Length: 219
Image (spheres, helix red, strand yellow):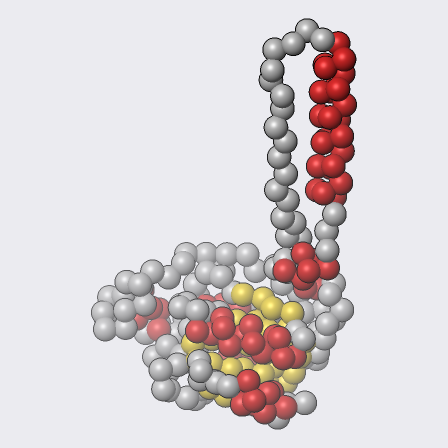
């Protein structure tokens, strides 16, 4: 929960030996403390809505759809957030145990981390905190950028570690121009379970109407 409280009080430090003045000051301090506690105890629905969900909270949210995504530069994240908003879905980000630096993402460097990973079909980058459960969900949107014509290897790490049985899985990707290709079907093969649909590439600048039209294809 995100609660914002900003409270302060100024104490009267004037020199006096008067018992009445001391009593008055103590009374004021007591009232100020009570007012502070009252303000700190209050929270609003807006405060609750603004707080990001943890994986455990997502499991118990009662929603039947979740958007899972990996985003190295933020483009896929923005699309994932918009899909979650339109579908009233939970949101889960796949975060690498070792974050990708700009140098790691340099596709022009044959020795960059991503180049090495994508040239190795068995590479499985570790995920920082993979505690998500699909219990209670029926639909999973799964998003990622396209690297070297395929999903990043960390997506393989994720799908191989989870059971998609009974789930409809809808892949989506972002890229500079490449389509989704076989990335979705490759992940489906690695997952070995779930009803994986074809999915699509979504442009970072997709309009709200276009996004809703795309989502409606699966409803």
